[in-house]
Image (cartoon, rainbow, N blue to C red):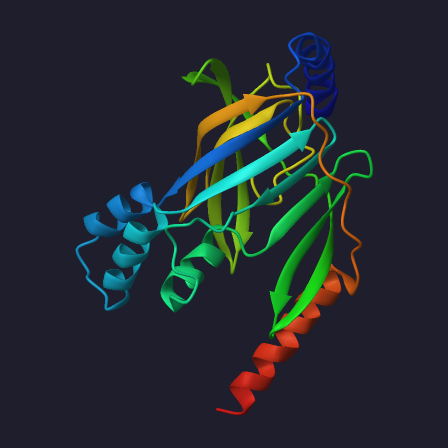
Length: 241
């Protein structure tokens, strides 16, 4: 039922959006940890890691993420800002926290290539679109010039539920958002709240330009292979302690 509803809304929005030339553009996200810090500071039990998280929260606001899209393709990444010291290890760690690599999304093929690094080597991970159980809410709010609708889904990490909240704009008929959030909601995600980070649209521009041709992806592995690789590496680290 929800898929049928999403499809009908998406098709109506798509026709409207084409007339508004809103399927090609560039979206800039500000990134912050404000809500996480509030929850952390309301916790009466202080931990040694809290100071590091506050420092991370302060530095993370120096970074911006960008989503370049042309209707059915998109590139999500964190550009190297001129104000960021590339030799600063902490800044580089924070940058990876915002986006650990570059995400190349192809909605026509219903997949994404995540270009990242592991153990000092560049790898490309093929990520298929997953059927996230988004629950559409009745709440709306205005972000910039667009009326956005709220959607929520729960994911389980290490046995604990985590709530993800997205605010998407049906007026911009592209099923895209930060990182690997794609192919599910009938509109562009202008705001995304995860347990630690919140991505907020600060600027969006539209044009008719197409994204540059895709790079050639070598050393491509599946998500399962990537998970096996990381598991094997961590097991080796723990055994050699």
